Length: 384
Image (cartoon, rainbow, N blue to C red; front, top):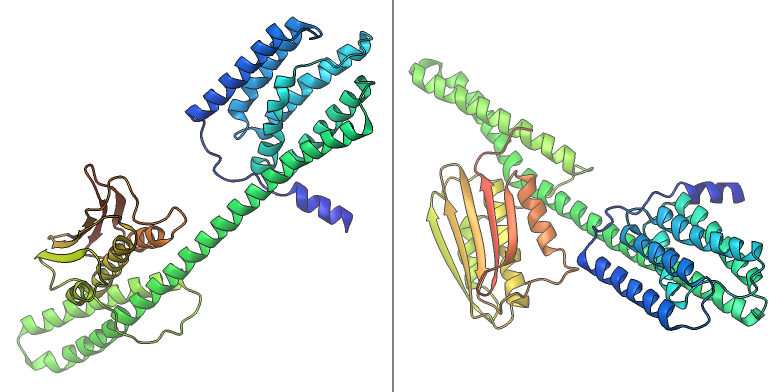
């Protein structure tokens, strides 16, 4: 049981997508360097002043790569502390060697738990424990209470890192589940609005070829084209449905399209005025594209009505071009304010819906004021 638990811990991978180094990291390192220099200059009882100041300044640099290389940062920083303690013990120094400003190394145990793999955590924690034990052995004035307090502080730093990591993992898992539900919903819509009707088209086209033998050749050729195109579309849709869902029981429920946007706009809740502008070729859209336009517009309008502060107007514009359909939903709310909370999943769902139809999705603040959602969907479903 214990062996299995250890193997499980060692097999834990590193946390994905550590954030890149940003300006705040340089500010943190700079502040730590200033604190080290000031203590090194003005504190009177510093042992080996030039050495400990130089070591502390070097250790501060590990804060810059604590996310990308958490174990390496711990090894360098706490390894330097070990070397100082061993050198002090060998030289017979009976006073603590080091600066109080190096308390910044507590960030490293946090980063180790937040970003490191299971193997990193085990190795790094062992080194931290060794450093703590050596530090206690090197300081004869240290009391039991001080030792316990030091271990509590180190443990607390790791516990906080683990808690933050667990929260981030749970949040990502929740987002993944939302994406799966959105994919299943889109699969049902594709199946219900297109596959069912296209099956009937194929059957009728096949029957038309049989009864059209006495008709002109042009009619037979037209029916053959209908059959080929319908069969190809049905095969694409079935492949997409199989990829997006793991069950086949779908209720045959008609889904809304561009023609239903007028009803969506007129039925909007009290608040900003919602206006609809339609232009271009919109009467011959594939049902999947029409449904995607409606659903994205619905979500964007809902977000604007709920979250756009001080907005008086929301404009929904749909333009049908020769090869694509363009949708934009723009409100005139307060500048720089998003129409959904950072933890919301509306933008994720809209982006997923557009991506599954090989379209593009953009959302962000407008230059002057308000928030805009812009989507471009191809008229033809790309071959998979």
